[in-house]
Image 1: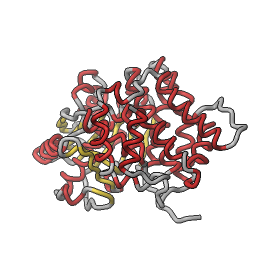
Image 2: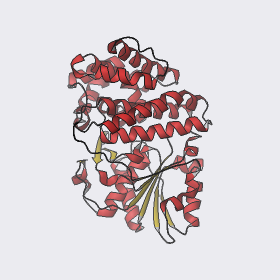
Image 3: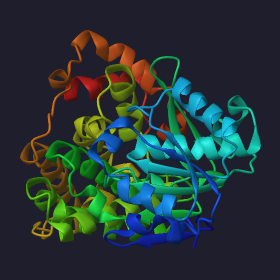
Length: 390
């Protein structure tokens, strides 16, 4: 068996209503100075009220930063870091979707270590130490609460990342009640995002692809595949919401250690340039990248996808060969987006055919992801995939 390393969040709390007991779970003391990183919509919906009340009840000194936007910018991140420094906080709490959690990770790192972000970009370059950090997701998609990665938009549209076990939180608190009010289109897109995490982790050609990640990816697909339609069309179903949140976390643990690949690399220009939500960006290119990978039998991608198929879709006919099962798996994923009401073509989200060349060039900047893909992707390949998706 090949050697591997597996890193994850050291403490995970999963319970409906857990955010109302946040101070207890985080062991907050009186006069702790806490920065809560979130977005304006979360505050407007009142999702954070129980958590904030718990912190106040424990006597914490709370500073709110609610300026996080989708695909958070470098400017937003550095503003949040300055707020943390000015308030002399010793705890950072990320509360919200993946964008808020990603910002919170780097706020804890940069405010705690005062290191230069330019030297921290990339894999394993962060030095630390960081402030105490807790992450509380309000969507079932990114798995950011258990991943050592933070993605920030720089220079207008380019996505850059910090990848280091240092930015794994001390605690991940998963409260499915926080996801009960998610709109159907957000539930669908974030759910597909989590499925992509599991699929790419399982098939990743990264040297650290390992039995733990593959096992987690399989269970994540089982949970999400069995519950995503119920969660989308009956959003108050707590059992389905719980399964989606747990599946998202397991997929996060999987790809945190067996990294994602070309689906994400080609999705980033869609989100960064055209401000399409990350989950939908992944969904738009998912079947096309998988077909590209499976077309070369030498890389084993078709075998991997065939192995995952019955876990994602319990009623799959698996009596045929791996190529036939793989083909049906990809078709089912494409049809799932349609069934869930998601847009399925690049043209549907405002991308023109003349934009595809620049997108392909941008995708090539995601070398840290492309190296994990089962099949090598050239700029010409990326352009061909985008054209198929357009």
